[in-house]
Image (tube, rainbow, N blue to C red):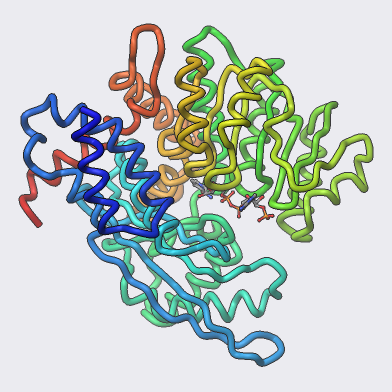
Length: 446
Ligand code: NDP
């Protein structure tokens, strides 16, 4: 089996040299799915995975804009339309200096499996730019977003490709892009998700990814007759996903002791309660400050510059910042400190070596494509509400989110059970694969 997998990966690598993040994502899927393909005649011999790793379309474009000093700036924009076998392309836009083809292809590839797991009819895509919103004024961000959408609008549409937010793209950026799309097309359609509630957005969309991660982790703990009550939880990041994951953990009786950003992490041993979390939301979302400003109001907490929070002893770890932020040595430390459960909020935050440690030590471990699917799931619900021209209540959307996370959990169990251990990586990849592969086979060689 190893030989078959290695041959496949060598073939993909040859065509995608210099794309390490994409190869990392493909390797994880290949290792889980190829043994399954080999055992199932309907997939075997169809080159189905080779078709899946090739994006249906890649668009790359110039984004020129003028900053506040009247200097001309040039960034690069992208949209990767990866797979539309089960629905229109769907996936976020990321604005961060680290954005390149490899990062977006890995994200788009992951998105195909994630969207399939949600049970909703959505294909996979991803896009973004190497633009850094950090330190830019609102008017600079607006001019950039308008220029970006002036090209992107040709490639997207409510039945074709529906982008959303991701790192560096929150409600402000979605608003500016939606405004420009509406102006260019002269129509009010649900072409982006993550919109404001008064102009077509869904309740619970901002909370959905973070809440979904915690609902998923709750299901994992339930399998061990356990819960979040009294659990010490470390979280990385302090953006959209991290903030709402923290909020839900607190509601379920857990104690959140860390949050972070790219400058380092804060450790509050007394726990970050609702009031402290509100302060962090004000710092990050309104003042756009660095996380260490937390210490000015809560001086008992400590700040650890340039570090990640995995060294802090915990019961549950929720990596919610970015890819490859949790390494093998971090995994070993978490295991040594008695961590029971690692549930990914970010996309691919754990390196393959770290995942290997978790699986080998039978730690409850959920890959982001399963556990962070709540965000895109509620984006799918936003699309449904836009089509109906109707809004569901907070409670209705939250209940649907909970049910979807429970269904994803049971799909992972169906395909991931190995004796008394649930291999969520294997389970998520196979369950996500089957639905897309069946649709591709039915639609012929296209
Ligand atoms: P935000 O931009 O709101 O927040 C990102 C957070 O991660 C910030 O605290 C940021 O710190 C930190 N971060 C970013 N890059 C790095 C880095 N290289 N090293 C350390 N910290 C970093 O993004 P989101 O919360 O939306 O996204 C976080 C993760 O969740 C991403 O992996 C994203 O793909 C994934 N995700 C998001 C979904 C959503 O609905 N938003 C849905 C599913 C997955 P700083 O401010 O210093 O950059």
